Length: 464
Image (cartoon, rainbow, N blue to C red):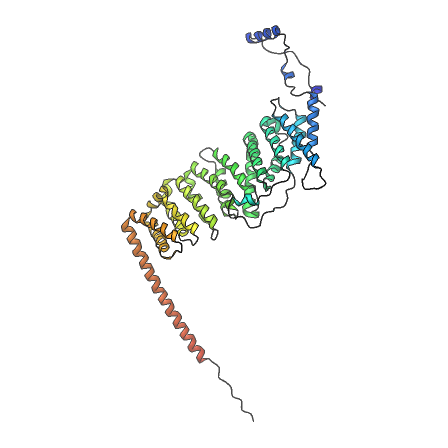
């Protein structure tokens, strides 16, 4: 069963009689050293080491939940010591491991990693701030073992030829590995992200399958469950993948942007992974600025109606997109973007209003708005004047004054013209209000007359 028993004996060196080869032979003979054949040099471990490794792997296959009171703490410590021994062996610079060791090793890793995850301990309502995830994160009690297991798996992926490892790390293994991203332990997801990304980088023949599997996770999250702890980590992997896309982008990748990344903006848990999502989207726009229009319209489509935290994050994303959009598209997108920013500027939530006001400090945004001044100014001026007149927050009013000064200096005549249009609109609205009140008064008067006319007469009964 050992490697040495089944391995062939050393054979004579079969090498061409070059001058360098003759010099090597002479040097070896003069030093009295024995010349080993290439086949004998491949024997990486001794028979005793081979048996010891298999024994360690077998011992590490025992699983501890760390929640069962019947489990022995001493046995848990022994397993952790064995895992460290196995890891130290993997770190030694040796020849590739034989298949007789790789197979039980992968089985041991699968037994430790692919386990039933506990039910979610998080609230049904998603936390408002991304930082809150750490506060409600559930730490796995088995992490002292899992941490070493992930290190062993990473070392295995880095040290073994992907073609050799392909027979053991198959599609089923990758699907199971992807399912572990649902763990609520952030430490485990970080290690898992590193391993999964390394596999994607080295196992080029699995890349299409891994991309499709991750897409399926995103789509299931957006359109069915909205429950998954590892969306942020998966988006981080995708950020690195997108960064490696060549230009022009393939149609498959553009469809991923439109059908997967943009709909991810509508989920309730979007604040938790928005940073990674915005990075992925901006990578696409940086590679092909023509996609900016598609992205902007998609974000506006999923703009929240009542979630102020999401509004602030989407304003950040819109501002960053404006810097990467093709300037030729400014005229097409200026009115859409400025209209949404103006609505946010009038928000009763002071954080949303202030964030919308700060967008006017962005030179690219001002440049975009200037490209469509005739269409954009009426919307912007109306929102500014409405804030100055009606907004409850003093700080918002002060910041709005600064915006008014800036846009008034851009084109004073156009600003005055917009004020006249606003005044005319208010006059017409007032006239409509007066007519509406007069109509209601007529209706009430007519209803009162009809009520009086149709009021029933009292009946007088005469007794005989």
